[in-house]
Image (cartoon, rainbow, N blue to C red; front, side, top):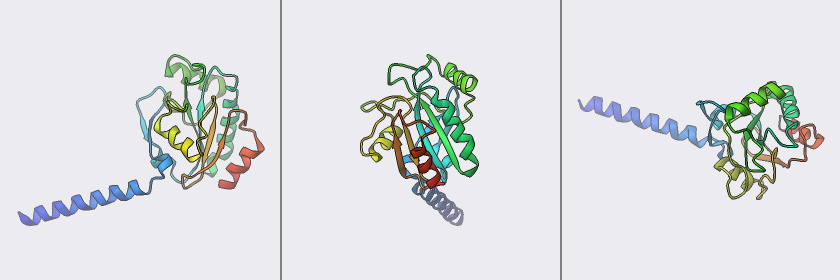
Length: 184
């Protein structure tokens, strides 16, 4: 009986250490869970995107910058095989420029712009309201919170912030491309 108890305790210790080690290797900026847009699936970002160059963008479907979806999808398709991804997070923070339901947003992105890159649940990105992901990104960018839709944060393969670009820097920007290509 004591042998079984000792074995069980050893197994618990090994499992606990494995979990702690897995959590320790998660880059803090990606150490968040997010629900897929219009779905129930919750992704742990660091598990899925660890080792990739990641661009995180607060998006909106009814904004003057909305055509940037086209360029974001172009970047995603161009670099995804080299370990790059775009993560879109719809937000109603700036002028409430998002559809009423997440399903409407998902349909708009897919049907209008052919968006294939991962899109996550509607969230807050604005200073004072930002969810923990966007708060961490902004703090890593020396307080550079999104001031409008389509702010872009770029993380290197280790999950470190290497770029923060406002709405006026479009996906086809040479500056943006240099940062992405330098990280790939």
